[in-house]
Amino acid sequence: MTVQETIETKLTSLDPLHLEVVNESGNHNVAPGSESHFKVTIVSTQFEGMRLLDRHRMINDLLATELSGPVHALAIHAYTEANWKSRFGKAPMSPPCLGGSKAD
Image (cartoon, rainbow, N blue to C red; front, side, top):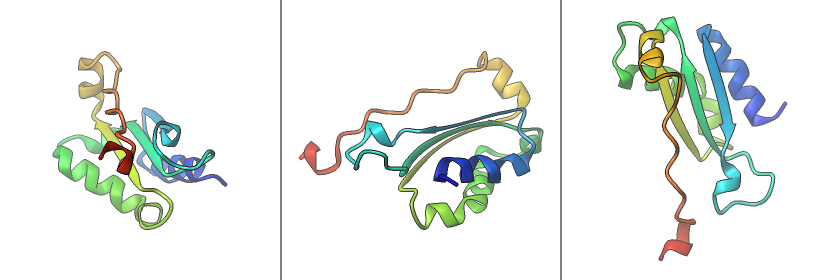
């Protein structure tokens, strides 16, 4: 199972109304085929009444193994259904990578 598939499988425990896991590793200074940088967009009723920080903590807890191993960066966009609808179903774009030491 790929890292992306593992992330998707673990996040389905939140019964998402929408789930998108994007491997953004190709946008960074990593080896081809890497699975180290991801963006997660998730909409779940389980986030109702939770602060954004608590939503992120919940996701980080679910993905603790991946975050302590192969995943270097994880952008999280966690929404309630109302948040998602007010954004017209769109998540913000990830910022461009400066290429690590190449930015010096």
